[in-house]
Image 1 (cartoon, one colour):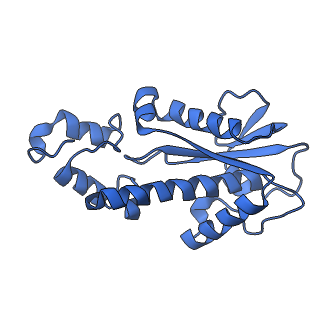
Image 2 (tube, rainbow, N blue to C red):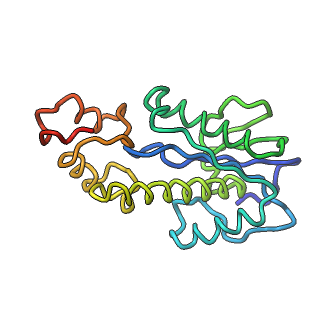
Image 3 (cartoon, rainbow, N blue to C red):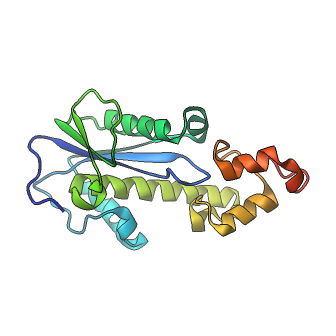
Length: 204
């Protein structure tokens, strides 16, 4: 993690859920309080689920400001996943309730924002505010997928979180496409354009 933070009110932004075949893309924005440090912040992908859940609680309790927002499956299909991700990030920053001096975004591009911003490749592993945002985005999205799992247990969303695992692809072949699937993504689109390959009446 960086040892010399940028000056002013710094907001970190990251997303979760660009690659899955189902569910929303979720973005988080976090302004950390330098007087209330949170040990253990790191890229959410490098943390265990238990560690992410514990840190998410601490971030909500100790951050100077935080917000989580999403772009829906319908918006992903209409805009494409990149533009939907930028939209979710814009919504998260707008929902902060505080205006940062600088927004630092994980990756190689930033959404259009009314404040200065910079992209930081690998920022979720090097910038504490971005790491915090990655944890909030990941835990919120995982919770959304667990909710979908309760409604549609045959797809195994709680296990694979919508990613194109062999188990998820097999479930698509057996049970077809449902409303939470991203119809613009190739494996889902293939189901829709090749109905002869799928069980009768499976598409919903």
